[in-house]
Structures are given as structure tokens and as C-alpha cells.
Length: 161
Image (tube, rainbow, N blue to C red; front, side):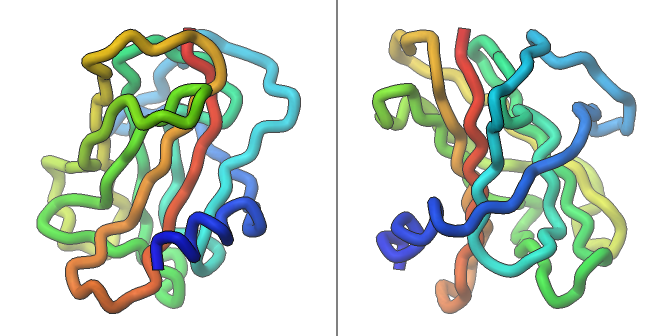
């Protein structure tokens, strides 16, 4: 199933939008503003998504450690919810420009996640190895405690400095 999703990932493109917001709802500046050529978040699964990636934005530039922040608003589209489980919204893998996985973590929240309202999740990802600057991407994978669903993913390209 995961191999099938990896093959479908490039074929399913949906533009990611949002502005950097901390979990308290305050707008925050990005690490380094950039002018991306045409970066896109690549998503699998249903649409429109009820999850928005707030950071890193496609084409932005960040240094390590990278803070990954998302906002889940499952009340916006009950036909396309993002599965949450035990205060987690999924796992995140960080890949460098060669495609090697260089870090990972779980998106967690300290907010009440058992609600129909918006909930912010985040994780700080660092790497124990030296990561070369340049193109990178994260892959966010939805929680699937049943193991029976079609797991949704989001891939966000950005730059490491």
C-alpha cells in the first residue's frame, strides 16, 4: 500500500496555502523569505483537505532544526477528514536533496484534540548527521490506527540553508 501511495504522490497535486502561525494563533515570520519558482505541496487522498501545512511553506528556506506546524480543521469537510489519534496528527519524515531520510518525528498537540474546531499540531525535526544545504522536503503521513484506511500524505518541498 505504501509503495502504491509513493507512486501516486507525483500524480496528485494540490496547491498548499497558508501563512506561518504559531499554535497560539499569532502570525510569525518565516526563517528566510524566498521567492519560489513554482513549488507545490503534493497530497494524496481526498480533497479538499482539512489539514493545512503552516510551516514549512513550499519553496521557503529554513535551517535545522525545522519546525513543522499544521492546522487540522476537520469540521470544514466531514467527507475528507484528517485522522487524529491520541493527540497526534501523523508522522513527519525529513529528506535531504539526495532523497535520504535525515530526520523524523510525530506531530503532537497540547490542545484539546477531541473537538470539531481547529487544532494546531507541531514537531521540531533535527538531524544527528550533517545535512547538505539545498533542496529538501518533508512528508507528513496521516495516523491510521486501524490499518484499514487509505492513508493520506502531504509532501512539502523547501530549501535547507
